[in-house]
Image (cartoon, rainbow, N blue to C red):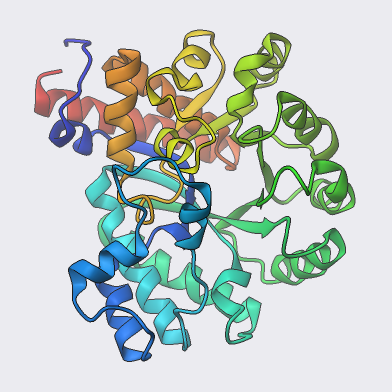
Length: 353
């Protein structure tokens, strides 16, 4: 079959995708969020189109980090049912983006903070609602728990982590560290991630090298035992680091549109993803916060194919990188790879590719 570059969004939307870096907090079903906001008497526009402009980053706007951050709210949800509804409807939409498998990350703090809901109960609700939606659509789903550098110190993180671990939810497979890279470097979280490593239950991914130098990627690997890195764009500046990532199979979760909107990498056409991929670094394509960005994962695929001349075979390689980096047992990972290649074969046949 033909191995060519696809830039048609309709076709790429149907391409089976594996995603490792998407935040639930930035992925919400807009009609459901609008209904929740009006039901709870929140000060938002009753007109849906105007509401949409309020809660999303302007799609074609210039990069603006503070504007981007301002779109993240944690006071929407006034009941457990609100959380259940937004999670279910958001995950139902994943199939429309061609998702085959996703590791969806979320912060229990985000959904629980405003009402001081029990973090463990919130976690159960999110996983249960998302599992139900994923089962309805056939999307395979696992979860990462996000801890925010700026909102908890490592000892508070350890306490919450140990409580969450006690839930023994098998679909939760990893721990994510997000937030302000500059003022809260890896050195401040060594005990927390040593605890995670000692337990040997969860994989570790660290947001690093997005707005910080490549040294922070090194530190995340050495000090926090990361086997995946969120963003890691500054890796392009360090050939030795690239060599290390290749040798150890440390996967970069890269997000073209998000990096543009936040201003962390404004030259989309020369985003590091293309060069790192050609160099053999295990990179992956991800959406990050697609609803807030007024975008979706397919948009990032269109950009990657357009800017970097990625062929169908290249996309398969990128998705196999993602499956290899997934926080799954080897036997499950092997089976998933076979199923993924079957899905790709069906896509190729349907589109004569």
